Image 1 (tube, rainbow, N blue to C red):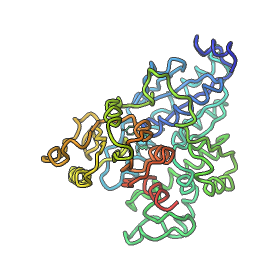
Image 2 (cartoon, helix red, strand yellow):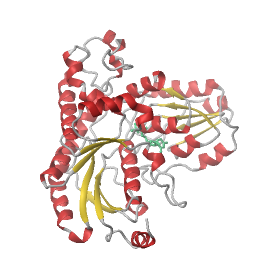
Image 3 (cartoon, helix red, strand yellow):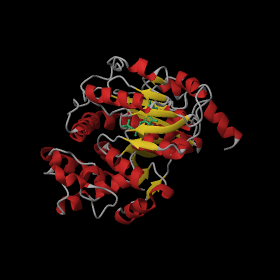
Amino acid sequence: MDTAEETAIGTGDRRRRRRVLLFPLPYQGHINPMFQLAGLLHSRGFSITVFHTHLNAPDASLHPHYDFVPVHDGGARPAADSPDDTVHATVEHILALNRAYEAPFRELLAAVLDDNAGGSVACLVADAHLLTLLDVARGLGVPTLALRTGSAACFRCFTAFPMLCDRGYLPVNDTSQLHAPVIELPPYRVGDLPAARSPAAHGRTREVLRRAVTAVATSSGLILNTFDALEHAELAALRRDLAVPVSDVGPLHMLSPPPPASASASTSCLLRPDRGCLEWLDAQAPASVLYVSFGSLAVMSATDLVETAWGIASSGRPFLCVLRPGIIRGEPPSASPPQLPDGFDAATRGLGAVVAWAPQEEVLAHAAVGAFWTHCGWNSTLEAVCAGVPMLCRPCFGDQMGNARYVDHV
Ligand code: UDP
């Protein structure tokens, strides 16, 4: 990039050549890779406009070179967590988001397209779950790219869903089925498939996954946060089955340019990371610490939290544990941080640190971290693989069981 262009970046982006529009799904695990992709595109000379929901809105002040367009949600709020079927609740929420944002997004996108001063629009990169919004953009003549923030293997399950139903793997009518291998998709077992657990929710999930595949197939291409050395066979299968180009651009957290030294490593965090834990790690022996985090969405019962705490204490190892507010099932994200059981502090004798949110990428890259007890969200999995940290897997829902199976077997 030449100096003149760098100057243009420093004085605001409106003179850049081409503009990429981005629309993340408003969940942490989807926002992070979208912003990492934004950083990558920006460093290659594109202007960036981020459409976003009010729910989990990004902090625009942390990205002074981007334009932000808030889209009113018309009241779409996360569905209440359903204890037995988080996939079902998530599917309903995604459908509600698509319904709520369709009309406002059409209006705002048309306005951005009319704004000639903003530079010509190259395309919209939207989260692949924003099915309707991808259609809206294409309807207005904007080429679309779908970003899938999960693994290639997971999207293969989406494309294979009709086959999985035809061959009787799904829906799961009997829990003994859960351990059966999925012969066509090794190393998956039936219980690893990103499917609704309740047969009643099966039809709805099948319909959403069909629409998700159509949204990708009717876009100009699919972007995946993965890389060939990690998922060679899965990427090859997708390229064979999909008529659109499939780009493996990951691992995005390593390829996107680092944020300014003054900012936290992740400028897209919805909770403020507690950076004090990095100093605490500095004082620990190399590869000695067990890092424990279950991501931004997974919930557990109060009983499971007690068991988890005693498991950590009984390991006798130094630990860094993330207990995010709302991790207890039924509690809102605004709840106070959960309490550890009586006697826990005495039992662990100051061996550990507990935070509400950690600067995870930096934690995993820290020499003191020897293992990661994780829920196996795809970002966490990629971050651990790239940092070379062994994982203990405690998957909860969605794609996490499949990710755990791959961690274990591949
Ligand atoms: N994360 C973080 N601090 C934490 C826990 C998680 O910064 O204390 C980040 C983590 O680095 C990852 C994202 O939040 O990028 C979680 O995404 P993932 O796909 O692993 O799980 P999800 O939250 O979507 O279940």
